[in-house]
Image 1 (spheres, one colour):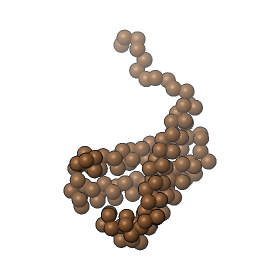
Image 2 (image 1 turned 30 degrees about the horizontal axis):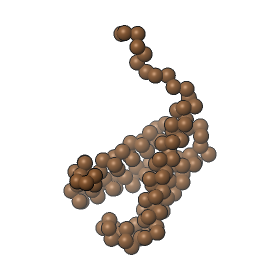
Image 3 (image 1 turned 120 degrees about the vertical axis):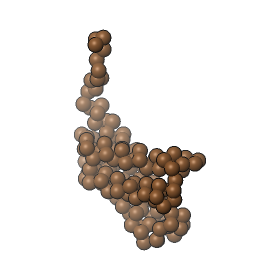
Length: 132
């Protein structure tokens, strides 16, 4: 309309670099969470209201998903698994603990929803060129 381009043209290598940074951020979040579940399963299980075996399973799933997403190897399958983990977390916060989207003291489920969307990008776009 005014001669202003609607979309910014970004070279493909920057798209791949962006996907790499996204994957690394997702991996950092889930890797840390998985490590915490596995290093102190009794404490984590009690704080979340889960059984110890399920907490260990959850930690292993998060850690495996983080490794897969970071490396790009089976990243889309890992993204599906991590989305399921986050949907479970959203269910716990929204339905079981009756926490609102924003919650109090940033304890809502908005962060989990953000991780779902980040994993949806990995699922739909793939891991990019910078992957194993």
